[in-house]
Image (cartoon, rainbow, N blue to C red; front, side, top):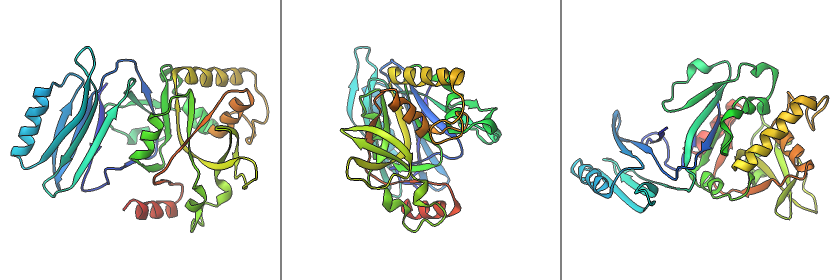
Length: 315
């Protein structure tokens, strides 16, 4: 499946990604190849599409460059790497539009993103993104976030990145996540308290905090006050699991489905559980969950006030 990556230079900064009203994660394969489509807004109402696949040759890249130059546009490529099958596994693309807006995109991975899966609830009919797999959570009223994620468990075998749909963030953050080498990693903001300043509709006591000791997450819960031992950060709702990590996650959940009764960590039941409850379950089972300390802008949009703040932060 091709992954469409769109950069609208007139409407959104190159370093930001916004996905709304869905639950999204990316799965991986072992193909060591890349297939991307770039859509660039040249001027308002006009677009130029550049398609680069794993099989694009150097000669074809040079042809794209000449065509873009002839149209008064900028196009550069660098850091290109081919594998033994003459397939692209790494490339950096730079481009410039007619208004002199420019951007850059890089991709490099032994296990590149293969599929994008969106878990939808009651408004599935509102989504029409191309090249995306949709999984409808028909039981969304009966459970919380954890249950919605597990509706897509059949796509988790090879490892995946999961992110909430109501967050906006800098590209640097997802790059940090992609560089993670362990089995279960979660994005953590150590400068999290500033995000709650002037945020009257979303109090700091709603923060999903994690306690970090010796480079590992040892505890998760709503609002952990500062303490002398360990560091407190906020879970930014992005996590990455290797194939092994995904297997642990799914098997643990399926065992809980069959055996667990009553309260589940901070929630009244497993059905009402959120991801941080599952993190604590894994931690209590001696499974290592690693923090990925992020830097860069991000914001979670839960209220109209949050939306206005996010608009100001991201122009």
